[in-house]
Length: 360
Image 1: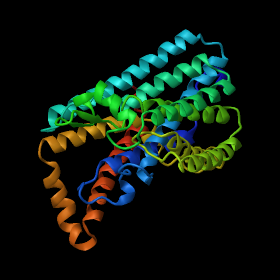
Image 2: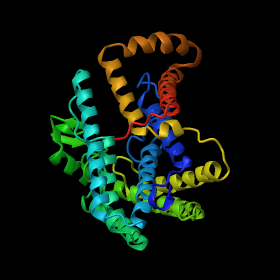
Image 3: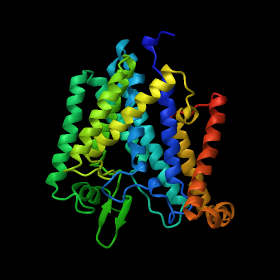
Image 4: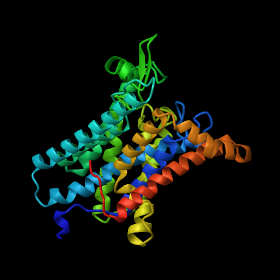
């Protein structure tokens, strides 16, 4: 096959995507939410825990994958309109899948309201916008300019909003108006809403994907050494910026973009060196090639278990009762999440060995 006319696929990217999704399942599947290790929880507001790196890592890998998939096609003369249509259709499917999963949760979980936005919705929106930028803006310097403009423009908007605190920041104000009771959190008494994947904070998330697009270009052109240099620079820039603009996942602050993006670039560089260049096993690849399917399947499984009333009896019988007296409730809760994740890992491994790939 002519590699100039086909999508480029790297085992390291599949592996890192898979490890990221596995970490996402681990964080989202605690057996007892009253007993969760700090490193498995997101920061309550400002700050950045290990769990807070997972989503930006995934979004940056989305950008890498876009570059690896579309770059060779653009170079072989594919029509921009055709590529743009492909991007928008896939983005729409991802968003609709995210909405469908929230419908499942609303239908099966008692007392849960319908939420319009969420993880897959943000992935789809960012995929669409960043993909169109890649198709129509091929110059790397202009892409960097757009990246910088997004971060600086978003910073200006946040500062103009007058506050970075919950409920009073500009992102929450916009989500209160545009999402209301369909947000992640909604206070009927005050009418205030908050969504960590809300409308305004999706803007800097596009910048995270753009950073991934640049990383993908370096990988395609054999310039992987830039990953370490830019990764370190981004981490340092994020740390300095955090002195005046805190790291905050829920607002997806520009400092958070650079801090987490820098570490993601370093992780991609290390994975590329070890797996693609040195031949190490691509641990996590089976999860990575069916990443969204694994996420969606685990979501539905969780809703079915919780909605049927089987979740807590199962957890108590297999984890809480036998493990808590020996190792404490935190370990029992984490053990449930680890076993749940491992079961999905084994299922995705079966899919991989049989050549089954579910694409969205």
